[in-house]
Length: 315
Image 1 (cartoon, rainbow, N blue to C red):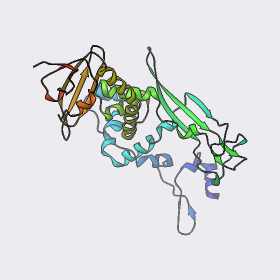
Image 2: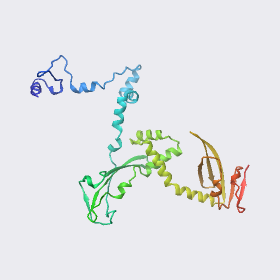
Image 3: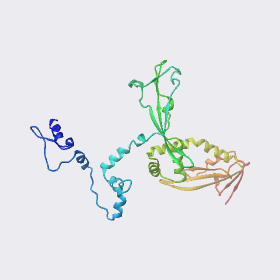
Image 4: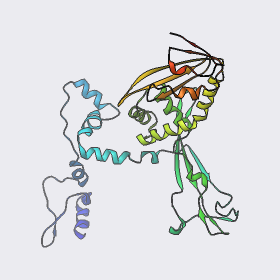
């Protein structure tokens, strides 16, 4: 340390230069070329690129927003750079600036129902889980465009004096990661535009800087299907209670075989139904109570036993 202090008085920024110990005592190795330590650390990651064949390409790469050759080409084939790139973007959603902050509170104990609660600022290990902060992501869709909306939700930890129970508000546990606008936009892209999961992930990252995993998209599809199930059932009841119903089926190719999509429509409503086979026995139960005109393309399973139904088959 005395050698470093002595060298600092002689050479500016001497602490940044190379100092090596000998077997007996510290000594400074004086060389003709002195290299800063930061350059030595950066030397292991330096890649010598081949010059561009066309000068115009070198000019474009120099003034581009990112280094195309390093960030878009070389990183795909180098395992070290791939790991560094994934580690830097793993928790990117947590570092995005929040658009709105929400504080979740509770008024009663969920265990005994008492309202004698004390908020706890500093948690102890015996009080349960420490996660009191969650983030939710949404899209604000307007006529002017689509805007990313990040909601930072924080929950207060409570202690019940009546029963001694420690808890956080119930809304904190039930908070969804993605809100209705974000989920609706994902379903719209898949259904209306036929976009794949990978394409949706890349689009969300390029436009909104949000990371979506494949499991997130699959969960969103399940939640939205469950949410619109009552609407689908109400649509089927409306079709069956009408006076005119058109029905047909078509074959679709799948990755592991084939299936059939049935379509039922009237003058105003339309509903689709997927079935793994062309077996139409389910129609007997579905069309029970139908008293209108049924227009089909010569399919025997549409013929029901009820004489009150007026069905017409188009060959």
